[in-house]
Length: 112
Length: 113
Image (cartoon, rainbow over all chains, first blue to last red; front, side, top):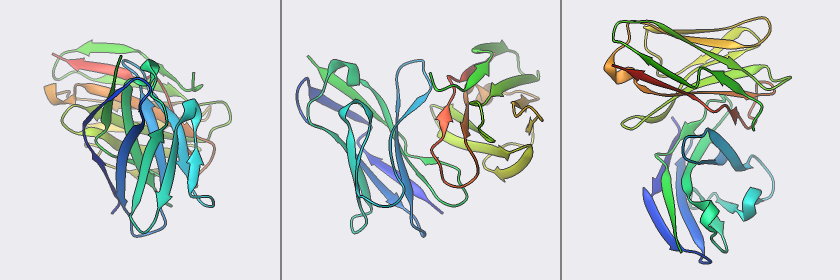
């Protein structure tokens, strides 16, 4: 079975500071990893994905994530936080059976 | 806008009732997935259809059922509703089976009173 652990249900950073949201996965097969963002009262929007190839993945809105197999991690980062980044972020894992298994989410608050 | 549409946006109903949630996938997408998002369970996979056939099942209750029609839209039927069924129900679609990213609709918020 696959699983995802997101460390920190709430993260607060100052505007302009580094954003780091942590995600560790468990998978018995090569994983496919995703980060989604959910703004209040909206659906989930794909930020970025890792399937195969380059382990540093760039996504939308200046976010990126690095797949580290040795650490079973897929942490999400952004060099400089903007107020508009305030949202809930979900890490998810998938494999050949295709369903997404989500983490419990991290609520990101940006401090002006 | 992901291109996935869901109706209705909100639904309020009483315990014991039955409701139908509708999803239209992105143009050309053959796979449809249903997820439930609740405060206590988080985001959970319910069921997947591919080109009209059920492909995978997750934590879907026997009181719940789904289908995908020839035009590829999908419906999720929830019956004998309980208070605990109150949640956001999301539909997602992807182009074909295999591991591709899923595009989510805006969701249907179901409130059972």
